[in-house]
Structures are given as structure tokens and as C-alpha cells.
Image 1 (spheres, rainbow, N blue to C red):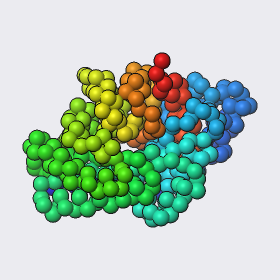
Image 2: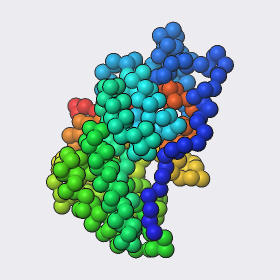
Image 3: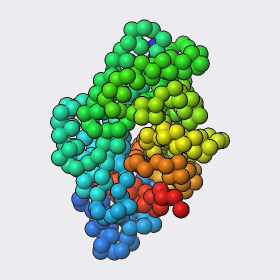
Image 4: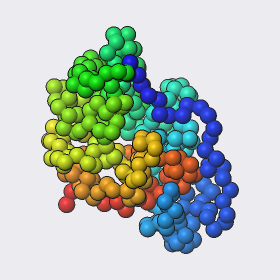
Length: 346
């Protein structure tokens, strides 16, 4: 049967990079956020982006920089940071928002997570994730429904506007994509009343077709919008993710369609890296290291009327091996260079 795939390390060894002692010439900063101390001393010279190791092209934005006003750290980008560390890292770097995952929230307890986020003054841009409801067996479908109801309640408690839905792949031994998509549509419909009552938008995330078998039978933004259309925009929307959608032939038309209907509930950014790693899920790279045209993509999202947070969501072994503060500093630099300038329409 098709079951939810956990992609967050709930326990296990911490990344040694967060405790690594580097040679003096490689040290960016000893404090969370990385880079800003050296920016002040050297005007940006000597800063190195991770994981590429190339010299930084722009200075690290300081906390309070207005260009950071919509930047959110998706927790998966710094996967070995605990929720507490991710919150502290956002605050230190001046990021106003965080996209949280359910597993780290469960580790500390929902009430604690709500209090930590509130006390830090952060917005929760989204909760990852619900979905994985394409199973064919009644018991598995009922379990998925119950899990998604709990996810809706958690999202509301955290004050997040959106629960991201990953539809799920094919059940074991199943080759019926059409049937799996139909079950996803039925499952979403069954969740709408609870989401409506909680004030939470369900965000369907179309996934790159390479994941259709095991994670996401909804592969295009067009398909996601078709699934969302029977419902009010405040109830069901779509997640626009550059990694999953950069290849789609009519993606800019579909972004405009989503914007006209008010259905863009999240904009997530990262790059498509080649060569693909053996585990293709880990091909989500740092912006600017791959093939995505962030200028065109972001302009389309802005022209569609989206004004919400922009989450950086990276799944990449080399990013996860780097010191968390350096990852956040790099993504902040790449964001203000490649994404933020295009968030306002001319």
C-alpha cells in the first residue's frame, strides 16, 4: 500500500559541520547567520557560498534589511537543526518566517512549538506536510485521513496559513495513475470541511514526474489547479515550487491561471542540480547552482498577485553537511540576488 514517506531525521547523529572547527581563513562567522561579521571587516571579500565553495557575489544582508521581509527558511533546508535551533537561526539571521515540518514539531510537542515560534516573533509560512492519501485499502485511507485532520489542527495552532499536501505515489503493485489521482481528489474533498473550519488552506504541491511512482501522482501545476477548482480559493490552493515545475512547458500560463483564481498559497524556491544524485530527491540545490530561471519564474509569481512568504526548501546532502549558519547566510545572499528583486511587478 502507499504510505507516507518520512524525509525528516527525527533522531540520529547531528551534522558534524555545526560543530566543525575551520582554519581561520575559512571561518565565516562564529554566530548564527554567518558572514555578517566578515562582511563588515572585508566588504564581502573572502565570503564563500555553500555548498559550491565559490566566492559570494553579494554581501550578506543584515537583520532588519527590508529585502528579507518575505524570506522564510523551510526547516528541511537545515535538516539537522532541531526546531529550537532553526528558530534561533532565523532570528539571528533576520529571517521573519519559518516553514515547519510536523516531525520536529512532534518531537518537542505542539504547545511548546507554538510558544517558541510566538516568543521569537516569527511567522509560520507553511506546515509540511499532509497528503499521502492514494492508498487503495480502506484502513490505510482512513489512517491517512486521520493523520491529515491532525495536520490541519497543528497548522491552525501554529498560525500557518497553509498545510502543504504531497498527494502520494502509487500503492505497491499498482499501475493505475488515473485511479490514484482520483483517490487523491476524493481525499482532498473529504478534508475541506475541517480545513475550512480551521481557517487553513490546503496547498496541493505538484511534484516533478520522476516522483510520480512513489511520492506525487500530481505532476503538473495544471493538474493541481484542476483538482483545486471545485473548491473555494481559501480552501484549496496550489504550491508553486521551482524545483518541481521549472520544466513544465506552459508553467507561466498556469501560474497566471492560479493567480487569477487566487490559488497560489506558497512559493518555494531552490534549484535543479545536475548531474542528479543517486537519490534523486536530494537534487534540490542552492539557488543559482543549477538550471532554474529564477528571474522569469519569480516575475510570473509576482505578476500573478502573490504577496506571501518565499520559502527556501533544499534537499541536498552537501547542503545538509554544511554548518547551518553558513547555509542560512548563503541562501539569504542568493535570495536577495536572484529572487527578491523580481518580487515586485514593474
